[in-house]
Each structure stands twice: as C-alpha cells, then as structure tokens.
Amino acid sequence: MEKMVLKFVKGRGAISNHPGRFEQLRRIPYVDDWKTAAEQKKEKIKTEITAETARRIITTNRSPDIDFDTSINPYKGCEHGCIYCFARPTHAYLGLSAGFDFESRIFYKPEAAEVLAKEIQSPNYKCRVLALGTNTDPYQPIERELKITRRLLKVLLAHNHPVVITTKSSQIARDLDILKPMAQKGLLQVNISLTTLDQSLSRTLEPGCPTPARRVDTLKQLSDAGIETGVMLAPVIPVLNDPEIEAILEVAAKSGAVAAGYVLLRLPLEIKDLFREWLEVHYPLKANHILNVIRSTRQGQLYVSEYGERMDGSGPYAKILHHRYTKTCRKLGLNKIRKKLNTDLFLHSCGQRRQLRLFS
Image 1 (cartoon, helix red, strand yellow):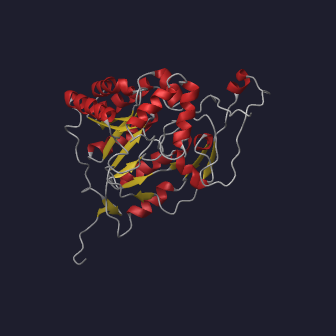
Image 2 (tube, rainbow, N blue to C red):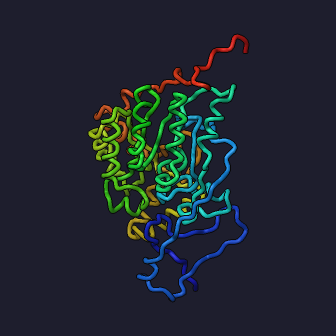
Image 3 (cartoon, rainbow, N blue to C red):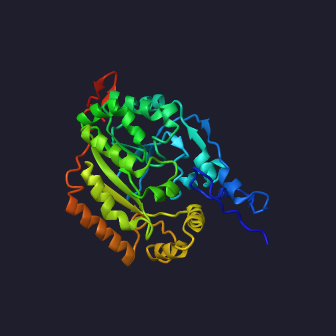
C-alpha cells in the first residue's frame, strides 16, 4: 500500500501541496524510497513572484466580529509560511494549493500606491480607518525589494489618512520616517503579532518570520518612537502555546504595548488537513491530544465558522483561555487607553480638506 508523503521542507511551514478545493484532479505523492530522509531535508522550494494588475486596492467587509470594514492587502500569499494562517485557502481561487504554493507563489500589486491615491481622491470617497495586513503580512520578505507597503504609507501620509498596521515583521522599523509623523497626527496604530516566545516552536510554526525576541525588540522600538502599539496574540493554540498567554502579554506590556488582542486557532477549509499534517510531523506524540482539545472548543469539530464563535470558540476550555487573557490584560493595564484614530485631518485632493456639500 502506498504511503502518503509527509516531510519537512526547510524554510516552509506546510508539509504538503495538495490541490485546491476547486480543482478536479488530485495528485497524491507517495514514498518511493529513492531518496533518503537526509536528502529530502535538503530539498528547497524556490519562491516565485508574479505581478498582478489591480483595478481597486481597498476592500470592504461586513463581518460583525472584526473591528474594521476597509482594508488593503498588497500581496497574495505569504513567505512567512505560518501553518495556521487563515488566508491559505484563498490561493484556491487562483487554482493553487493552500500548502507550499501559498508560501512560494506570491502575487504582488506593483501599482497599488497609484490605485490607492486614485481611490481616496474619488469625489464619493469617505475617509474611514484602513487596516493594512489583514489577510497576508504587508512586511513579508519580498517587501524589502518591492517596497509596495512603503509607497502605500507615503500616499496615506500625504493625505492624512488613518491606518492600523498588523505585522509579524521587524522590517516595519525601516519606515519609521513615515510612521512617526503619522503617529504624531493621530493617524497610526501598529499591532505586532506574537504567537510564542519559544524560538524553537516559532521556527516550525512560522518559519519565515523574525524570531520572537526580534519582534519584541521591534515593538519596543516603535513604542519608544511615540507610536501607539499593541500585541496580537494570534492564534492561541490549545496545549501548544496557550501556556504562554500571561508571559507574552507581560513581555509586550513591558516593551511599551498599550493594547492587546487574541484569536483562538481557526482551521477553516484546507487548513484543517494542513495543520493535522504539521502536528503529525513536528509533534506526533501530542497531535491527537491537541486536536481533541481543539474540538472541545469548537462544538466537537475542528472549526465552526459562525460569527461570534469563530474568533473565541466555546466550551469550558475556551472560556478559561478568555478569562486568563482578560484577567492578565486588566492586571497589566492593557486596552485601557486605546485612542480613536483621527479622520478629521483627511486631505481629499490637491492638499485641500474635503469641504462639506451644501446639497446632498
């Protein structure tokens, strides 16, 4: 009987590259014993980047359990390779896999800044806080070369447009020359995503990300620069990283964070199988236990997509996690002074504030 191939590829979070859910054909790799385990570990998957034409850059949503309704994502796919990333299934719309393809087939929008400038100068545009980094990380590795996020921020600063940035990358410090003046005008908040303080866990869980220590240093660097910062403890994975809730929040608070957020592990669509494979390779003795505890927080399933539950889960274990999180935030003074970003300074076009209409 053929054995499924479950192997670790250096620098990648996924263990497989199964076709997307919309594909009619499915190829199943199997062990043929031609390559030794050592040879397989040396295999690498190169990253391919592809330009994509974007007619619009601002997307909207009406989800009742997230605190923004407009966002920008300059990239599709993400080299950070976080095995838990809820954006992985979106690659299926491109005819690609949520596995290795998501981490190695990256699409970018070279004219994103120009499209953004055009959209916010539209006569009908209403200024609302934009979220940057809601689907994939705006500061993933290829941003060093492409600088699309940097150009987007220049446009936002030129028009005094407020934005909230969420990232795992220390690369954001590169743009302090833009971020500082935005923060001084009340136009900016930054959330640093910190899943674990354990470097060995981070190396397998999110292999393309900066180390936890470097992210903590970045959080402090931003805070010292006068930027309002927060920490995103996402996702909280039962058994695996939930023992670190208090420690992560404490380190973040000491580094200058004034706010925090958390999300229970989400496993929609293809991510369920990808995460199960990852556990079988990296934590074979704990895999079943972790999956069973996850089910206890999701009505006996691995995921429930209902609004009001998909972020926090349900059941005793989920309630305990929420209680620990809220109690620690209260103790550390987190989420007490989160300010509302300023939309009154928005410059509509030609350096002029938009004037009120006499007739609607």
